[in-house]
View: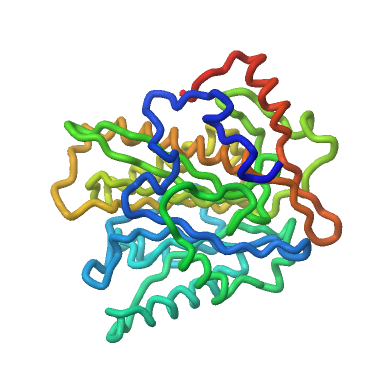
Amino acid sequence: MTAQERPRLDELGIGAGKYARGAINAITDVPGVRVGHATISDGHYNTGVTAIVPDQLTPERRSLPAALAVGNGYGKIVGATQLQELGAIETPVLLTSTLSAFRVADALVAQLLAQPGHEQTTTINPVVGETNDGALSAIRDRPVGPEQVAEALASAAGGPVAEGCVGAGTGTTALGFKGGIGTSSRLAPVADAEYTVGAIVQSNFTGLLRIAGVPMPAAEMLPEPSAETIGNSCMIVVATDAPLDSRQLARVARRAVYAMRGVGADFDQGSGDYAISFSTAERGAAPRDEDLSPLFHATMLAVEEALINSVLRATTRRGPEGRVGHEIPVDEVRRRLAAAGTSELE
């Protein structure tokens, strides 16, 4: 069974919870947001780049309101201080492998400086997140660089998003199973309007997996343990077309981190858990804080489902020295969900 033949959470009959999924159930449901991947997978390397590209960033509009939430700061995220200080992103958000983060950031800057409209640019703040795929990839070689960054940006598209062992998720493990890239979206009423919130994740952390509240212990479901997770981290990117300011987006980002507990994250002391949120809306009056609760709840639902999808869609990968990240057995997932009578996210 290939990654894209493996079921997503909605295909297992689990309802969306209080707020409906978007049409594609991906971060690309937010208008103007595209996603691209570049993947290296040959048994020695299992790694890559994932690019989240908002079309609203143009030479005429150099930044979008954004925010960063840090669940635990043991990470190598590039661009964090300016993101926090200015409450804005100036570039696409790229995800990759820990030791390749700095090569990816340099390549992203080079790509942007070569674009029309940047002929006089003398400062730009790249945003690059990472998790450690060293269990299943020869991470010290730092194989990800300009070629993969160019490929991920060039391939970025709307519509369905490849999940599981692709791009930045190619070599990650999560919750005892093979992890990777996952995405989901929700529609949320804010005051008199309906907005979309979409999430994409790079999962690489420990804990006891729960799907819609049902425990899925890897120790019981796998014939042998997966390669031990290194780095114990997660990157989450949340996009919305709601006209939020950076302070409100920081509140959204914090909810995205909270959602990790819904799937069983143990928030180990060595984790690097980050959520970046941004708005694609045209500049205008932000909604009242009193109206944001549905958007907060929708964010947590979307992130929780994206995290689950990252595991469900991942396929077994073998890395150096015989280490293996085992895919979750889908038939056993179905059996446990049916036995629990679970039908919906909360």
